[in-house]
Length: 153
Image (cartoon, rainbow, N blue to C red; front, side):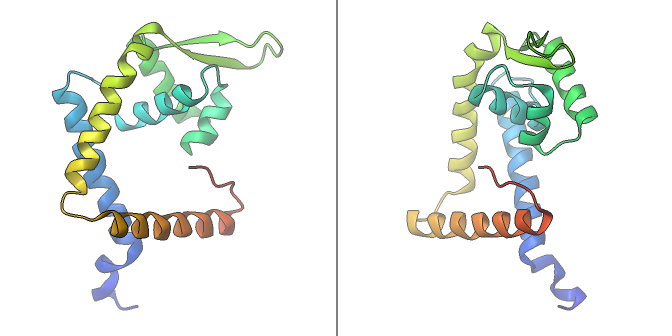
């Protein structure tokens, strides 16, 4: 590969696409009155899928270090969206739970995710979208295998 080709490489395109989608989703959240960052959204998704996760489990899900995850959780606690409770079985662990406010916010956030995806994929047919997803899945799996990481979707 030559330096002139780097901005068109698959990694560069994935990165640029991620940044564009994240920016658009952040704007859509804000316009809908949801002051949630993308990092906070990822933590909420982890909890919508598995409420009561430990901070460590959320770190793994989000692919963030423990201190970054703790800061994100603290921000969501300030917004009254999460509660941290000491694990009954292991006092060293904190479990994180969604508040009623966070549960009530889920559909509003999902609507903005749908709106963002519809905007980003405008003009693409289903077959091309599925092909793209399959290629991205393969990139993720191969990269995770090289890093000895478990692949989660």
